[in-house]
Image 1 (cartoon, rainbow, N blue to C red):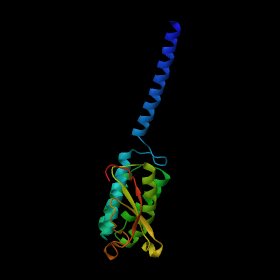
Image 2 (spheres, one colour; image 1 turned 45 degrees about the horizontal axis):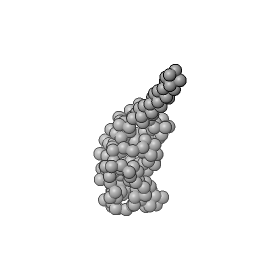
Image 3 (cartoon, rainbow, N blue to C red; image 1 turned 90 degrees about the vertical axis):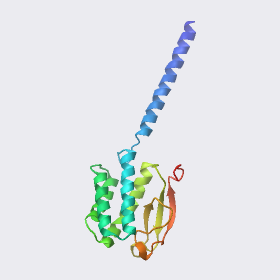
Image 4 (cartoon, helix red, strand yellow; image 1 turned 60 degrees about the vertical axis):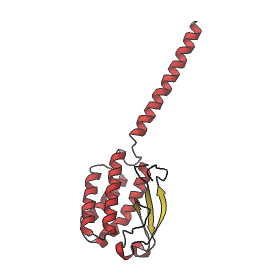
Length: 178
């Protein structure tokens, strides 16, 4: 009888230990923090949403709206710190600080490169993102951007070459909202 009781206690202890470990993992997943950027998924989603609004302003070749969208993005980034967010913040500050669309587009290229890394880092959000590329942007060097839509709307040329580009990657393609 003592052997059965001891065996039962050992199994119970092992089961509870595994449950605690699994519960800790689940809580960790729910409050996922990026490796380079410590913030909630909700905060990260808001940064991506602000970026997409900025991109749409550049598609419309509207420097004033792009400046306003970049200002909102700066507010969303807030005081969050990381090397990657510092790079993002640098370009967003330059875009917010001018209404010159040409200068905004220059910074949008490196902003997009860094936001791509940010999006890959944070993992799935509420909807898929499309990593798109125009070979003629940045004086023929080519440049990327992120979009919430598969349809190409080029932020580097606006209505001059609105459809120039292609989708190179779908981020979060297994998401149910696609």
